[in-house]
Image (cartoon, rainbow, N blue to C red):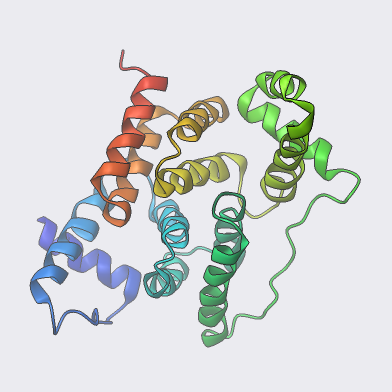
Length: 251
């Protein structure tokens, strides 16, 4: 099967019999887009379609490309992702892109869910309370990054220690501890989110190491970043791959 046939098959699997709105106005661009994304990128690497759609959701959320996000929420349901998994992927973006953009994305997700008669709100995945969120978040940080986290907190100037506390309690306590997605998945999605942001190479390197620590190998990271390429372009993709190669050199 060539890439044109693959792209038709994959597009139908994701979106059904629908036709892209630009097909009638810009057929050449639509063909280039479809054949590259759905005929090549979707078949590169070791990711299944569920993981690919989770990555697509977080990258589109980060980019705030909301019409495409809405289409891919439907595609995510079509490949078997649950409403919980979809919501958790979008929630995972909040510490990195901020709440306004996350809320914009959640609005689009909810519109799709309503159209498909998926009851809202979906079941809560919260696993911490006010007394436990900091410690449980810190525990997750240490699991991902090691004892360097405690050393970093100790060495932070007193007027900035609140930021380290927020990282533990908010970023990791409020989000990483939630149900619906496993730690390896959340850490891989985080790498894709900060890759899509651009200009965050220091954090990309840290999360490359974090992914390695939780069991995501180099081939998985390359596959995930490759899947981001059609949505973020070559510069940010190449920058992220350079970080991967620096942190996990070729043998």
